[in-house]
Image (cartoon, rainbow, N blue to C red):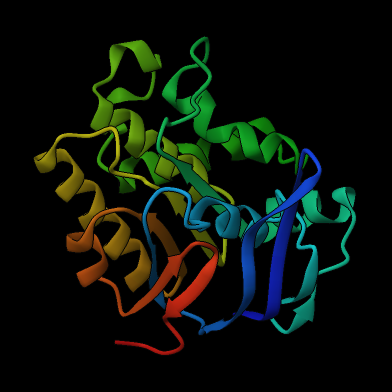
Length: 225
């Protein structure tokens, strides 16, 4: 599903160059539950942003589903993201003025899906994550765990092949984080590829591939564990 070949990412920093990633070569097979681990500043979020097309590598190649996407422009990447990827963020990124139902349905607006179909699909995935009784609630009326479930439902509403999660339990207490991880594992078991950026060694232990980064270098993660 995902293959990176000698991928590097650099940012200008004054008169110097800051290398966020250096020479990353890794394959994540279809249907894998993968964790990207490392300390702050190790390059985890940069890697996830490149996987999602939110950032572009400085050098190297990125294949997604057998297609070289390294040189895709912003418009092409927007289409790829909308059709094949779902994102879950640590801070939920829900729109406060919209209900759970409308937050989840929003990605389908950009596919020009009719309203009735959007709402039916949003209800379906909200039911899947256990929130069919919170359809008309706004984010401020939901707990942190419920907001993250809404965010996961939004990520799933377009039936993506790949789910990318950036510290999805980082803003949650231990018990709620465990529930969210259980949900992500269930999503993986439906056949999707799930990539989780995490500081948690406990979460990493539950994944079948662990990609370890340190100072932009990959120290481990070439295969499944």
